[in-house]
Amino acid sequence: MLLRTKLCALSALTCLFASTVALAGHDNIEVDPAFKRYAGLVTALGSADPEGRIYSFQAVQGGPARAKYVPDELRGWRLTVLAGKRFAAVFEVQANTESEITVTLLDGPLNGLAVRDAFVVENVAVKR
Amino acid sequence: MKVGVLRATLVSLIACAPAAIAQGARIPSEVVDAFHAALRNKDTAGALSMLDRGLVVFEFGAVDPTVEAYAFQHLPFDMDVAVATRWQLETRRVGGEGNERWVLSTYRVTGKQADGTPIDQTTLETVVLRRTGDLFRIVHFHWSTNDPAFQARAQGQRSKSQAR
Image (cartoon, rainbow over all chains, first blue to last red):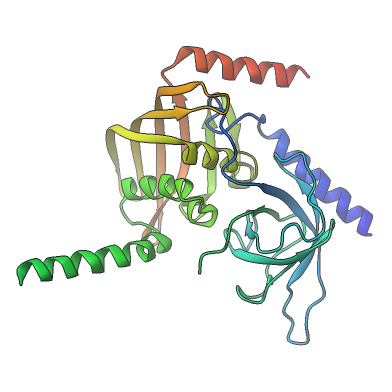
């Protein structure tokens, strides 16, 4: 079941990439990245707390970055949801493994996030 | 006294500006400017908040058919470019009526590429906006450049990628 979900997410990733050709931003200009970032897709939601709030999810990496993040590399980074009901919602990462991301309580729960939603994690603080 | 009141008013307006942008600007050209400002300020959510969920982007011959595709694939690079370059507005025309508006802009873009090559070109931008409720949001971008060498290079890179 989990494998099937991951395959679906990978298929969604392929669709996102197939829709366009990877070139630099404003395509003709090549500059250094403003900061380090990773993107990915949600493959499963974490367990809810007794109040029904969810603060973690499983993910598969994708997007322009070729490198893979390592455990707890994303700690303190800004996570922005790029699709679905939580489009443009921002969270701060509390911890991560290679396959799971947990956000802090500071920005509220992830509820509304769904499997196959895309996200980006950027090495910049959340402004509050 | 009058200067003090004016200063207080200005300070108050400046203090309110980020909140106004966060809620979504109301004038089409302000939305376009707020989008570019958000990119320059590395504010991913702020940039996304200016986009309609039906966004389609044409960029140098490539197409992002959905807002998710643009946000996932191209917006990060557009942010990198915005941070590394200076965009000076040169001309702007606005038009449309009712809930559908357009903003046509040309920018002189200057800076340096990653390899040190200077950038000095004109970028042409067409933006179509749609009003939902009180807010205008961007439903279409089309970017191109007046520099034929850059245009050819971008399209050449794309042809190679498609051939692979």
